[in-house]
Image 1 (cartoon, rainbow, N blue to C red):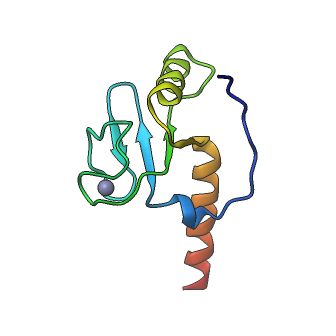
Image 2: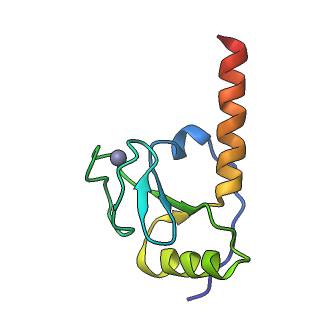
Length: 101
Ligand SMILES: [Zn+2]
């Protein structure tokens, strides 16, 4: 199976709360911050939210980042998203909410 990066317009609200963030040794739920969630878990054992997306803070052009990306692709059926894209959209939403409140 090959991996192809896809760009898609998606609402940040569809990702927030359903994202598993994976680092070198651990993965945690973006919703409740529970640590140690298995990367193939369909729901969070902490808050029971469905985990449809997965990402990593690590840059993919580093050895660690490339290893984590490979692990996510091999062991998880979730949609892998680019952390910087998520962070950018999430920060934009927070700023917008700040100015509207
Ligand atoms: Zn959770």
